[in-house]
Image (cartoon, rainbow over all chains, first blue to last red):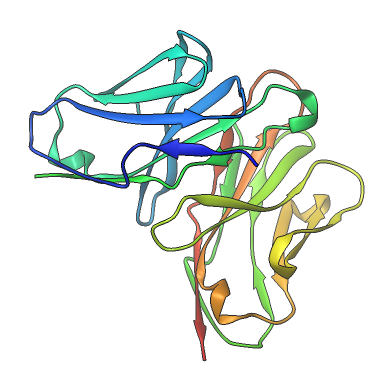
Length: 115
Length: 115
């Protein structure tokens, strides 16, 4: 089974702190994604990575950056956390294999509160 | 650009009753279509998927969905709902072929099951 692990289930941070959210997948997937989930807004893509050191902005990249130094690990960085970044953050991965057909596998999520 | 609409924000059914969750998509070609389920505080789990061929697809937990190209719909059904089906359900569309691996998600339908 594919396993996508997010390092923290819950995080509480203060405004202005630098925050790192970590995600690791064990299936050698090329693609990794960070989403933000808010009530009534569904999932919104923050950033996408299709290879080591490669990234692409999603729909709401402002206030976030990402890092992918190793294939299995994709980090989301809040350079200076703000209260409007309080949310649930979901990481996902997928394979570029044509047979995989874009299926994304999700971690359990990190619920971040910024005070 | 592709888009997904889930018209029902919240649905309440009685245990044992049948269920249909609606999903309409906008996409220029034959899409890849998915239904994911999210239990409270958890990540998303893939319920079922449609890529091509038979338009009625079976998934886990007794769910099925039917692809109707003429209506641009991919509705999720279950003949008899169990209390454990209470969760949020997300429909998603992806691009078939090419190198765009992103999925577009609907805003979700929250299912409440009454005893």
